Amino acid sequence: MAAKEVKFGREARERLLRGVDILANAVKVTLGPKGRNVVIDKSFGAPRITKDGVSVAKEIELEDKFENMGAQCCVKWLRKPMTLQVMEQQQLLF
Image (cartoon, rainbow, N blue to C red; front, top):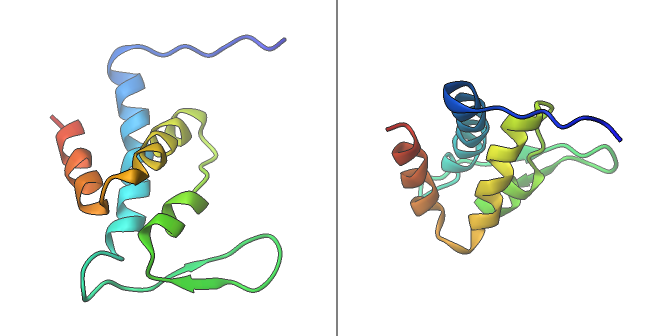
């Protein structure tokens, strides 16, 4: 069994926040009536074009383990409107 990597304090918070930022930045461009399209490329099939923030969020998987944890925590919050998630991103900064 592999040892677990444990982070505390500022470093842990910064890495989690980077994941939240990556997810929020990808999703927030889809918000509102002037929301922009996002292209989702999968390992199989043709790329998919969407303006659905939930679909964009569910497809994000980051290489860094802690950044991915931050992003995946946001995906769990998908029951909330996307606008609230962007607001939560701002609250994590403080």
